[in-house]
Amino acid sequence: MSTLEHVRTMLDRTLSLNGRAERFGPETPLLGEVPELDSMAVVLLLTEFEERFGIVVEDDDVSAETFETLGTLVEFVDRKLESA
Image (cartoon, rainbow, N blue to C red; front, side, top):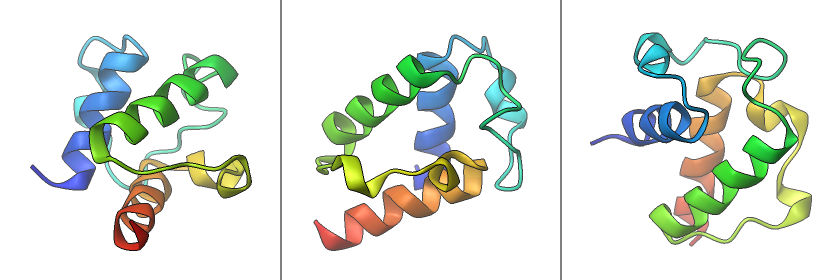
């Protein structure tokens, strides 16, 4: 399973989107467009990324741009995986 597929599945489960995330592509806007993606959901997602991918996410690593689209979120995870 690719990083995109993992992140999409994690988004769907964490945000309780009931399969809506299956239609998300790399250009799908997230922050400000998916109402379920609030500050608590961001924290939950980052915690899941750390556990699932074995990465460490520092506070300074994350910005609004990280969650701009599904593609930017996947790029973030891929960068963290490369530096792990």
